[in-house]
Amino acid sequence: MGLSALGSMPPRTLELELVDGPVQNLDELADSLTKMSQANRWLGGQRALEAHLEPLLSAAPRARVLDVGTGNARTPARIRAWSEKRGCRWNVIGLDPNPQTISVANAASPKGLPLVRGDGLTLPFPDDTFDAVVCMLTIHHFDDGGAVRLVREMARVSHGLVLVNDLERRRPNYLGAQLLAETLWRNDRLARFDGPASVRRSFTAEELLAVGREAGLTNVRVRRHFFYRVVLSGGVVGLGSVAS
Image 1 (cartoon, rainbow, N blue to C red):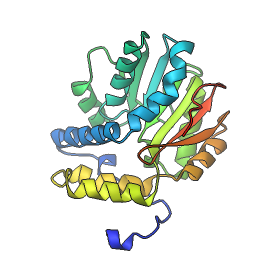
Image 2 (cartoon, one colour; image 1 turned 60 degrees about the horizontal axis):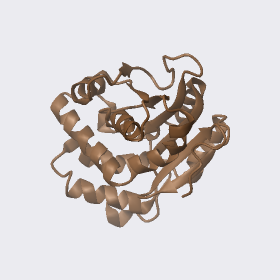
Image 3 (cartoon, rainbow, N blue to C red; image 1 turned 30 degrees about the vertical axis):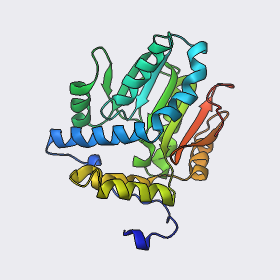
């Protein structure tokens, strides 16, 4: 889809991203995941997640946190480091279903960061195991029904917060992804394709809110953050309810 043909964003697509399938070159996969992780940090994804986790610092200084769809595990590593700087000792676990991604994460993650291979639709943990369950740039990899199942399963293993942080399907977001694909990512086959595809697959804020409601989240809400990020939150009253 070219920029001139874009107009207003169409309904979400279900095209597979390249990282959804097997990638023969693990170094290529690692490089692409690094680029996506860097963009997530530069463009406000990590800050948005921390804003919603902030109330948990005082409520649960030794919280257990699960990151579903962890990719190269930069998100759990950053959450753990962020909590330690604020005097907490959070046990943060990363989970991903892709054995290649887990291999990349194991090679790149800090010492002592637990990583688990598992399916987000059938999380390998008992009910109410965690104080918070988060996913970053993951829910758009599922169809509508799968997204509902994912959030419902995240809620099952959390007795506190559920946080879903993702791109919003908005025209400026797509244009930004296209710009990155044609400049900084132009020599990266995976990032060049998957960046714009991620926006085409993502939800609007209203669609994501409907997912949370259908999944049965309590205190469900969606907040927008810079740059065209949306965070679906639910769970304990008073946690995760930051302003846009």
